[in-house]
Length: 282
Image (tube, rainbow, N blue to C red; front, side, top):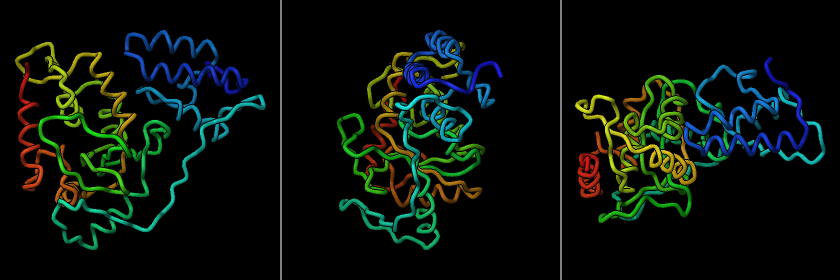
């Protein structure tokens, strides 16, 4: 072990503060912040081999598991989320035609609602490291960036559904690390769509611009990551039959940010606008 596994209350609070600062910072500033965390004795590599970064929630998870001990009376860790199994209530927006829901889809939705991930409080370790499906929703009182055409939403767990996707290998890698933490819209369809709605300028992703792959500036990418963490909630489902489930979820929810495989007439004008914005490089 490079560091230590016992900290005072003040040390733990300072570590939390620095981790939160690291998550919000650009990559060029993160190394200096990590050095400050290590001077306090905390090395995340002592507890996990994951090299994709860590959050305050990860630190708190180590405390709750007993792998890190806190000495002091005033330390207040973030409460662990308890996942319950409420009765399913699927609400469809009144402007959207009702869909006949198969018993298989009801079962899928009943299961997926139990796997709720809040990027502001939850550790990424609760996200399955397996293939599957995910649904992204706006938090209550959150909205997509305003453009000339306003989309119509359906809801899941009283939250507006904006996108559903698949992970062929790892939900944790695809959903969280590429979408929320990836800071590279060139590798995330969702980030690209959100960024163009914000009006971010697309720039070449690769050294060879002829590839046609684009992303946004470092500042815009960081701003986008912060917005996503503050405004989105994710639900996920471990599933080897993810391609079929994806079609069912798109047909059922008609998420406005799903362009491929979405043939619903409602939001067709919004999807056309989004497609045009994504194709614009200026």
